[in-house]
Length: 416
Image 1 (cartoon, helix red, strand yellow):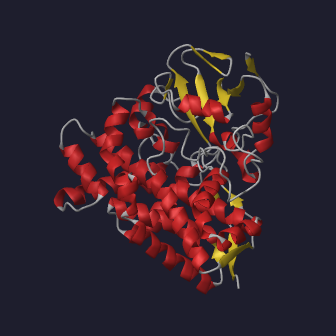
Image 2 (image 1 turned 60 degrees about the vertical axis):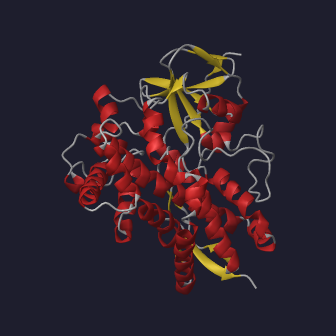
């Protein structure tokens, strides 16, 4: 079948995403035979845009490596890769060791223990939102819910939530063309190339995690940070650099991805009120509605892998060392996997959404937690018979990596 190069199918320019995902460009790539070669910088990558092909790459880590090169689009020098390497940028056995350290906290059984806390936070935020008569949905609901939950699990003071959301916002900026803060922000003296997202906000998050580490060494508690500190004390289980990068991932991923899903979910229900009415009429649809919100939102737009050997995918020959980028945003709109994929449908039962990746060892650690947060919020909105009406234009993040919403005005209309 070979490969395809399509003119005017750039999907890496962060400014494109200010108007939403460039779905027509992805559709052209899905329709083309084989994989599409996408120029990028001085080289390029194979764009994997079809649902079945994303699944194949995801579930074949021996061939499609996360540790070689980098999981974002750009290459890193060897020292930068090692400085920035997290759970996401590893293969077995390191990936297995690191994931095992924290996986227990995110099993369905243990996540369910947090349902009462998640519900209390959701109720508080929704009641305040209704009392205010609406406002910025991101600031009032979508951002504070997931950050307060993950901070509670980590053992981080909830009063620091706003600061850590601010840092996360700056990290998302690092995936765009420009940053609004100088390289020495937050007292940073590290070369940006050595910091995750190339952002001085990573320095601030590292410092915060290291202060938490010092506190838990002196006063251990029943929380995730204490667990990581104890693992680091057990020689060979977790290095100091692994600790700070793992703390960084847990804060960012535990906050940003669910926040993005909740933002796009609110937009989808505001634009499709009949779908929300279906949920109000039949609460058993909460689970399928949660999956549809995740498919629709696709919070993380892509991940890169690097071929560890010569291989073939979709009839395209891939050479050892070639970059392969899985576009989850495209896979989640593939009509070979989903009937009428551009329709938001809370009753959808077909396909497997890839908001958490396409499966395999890198399947999102926090998938069960994200589902719990979304479903609990929908349940509490339904209890209050709240219907959302959009009042302002969406302000989107100029990022090709995170499908971010920076702000959107909403007002609650109580359905009688």
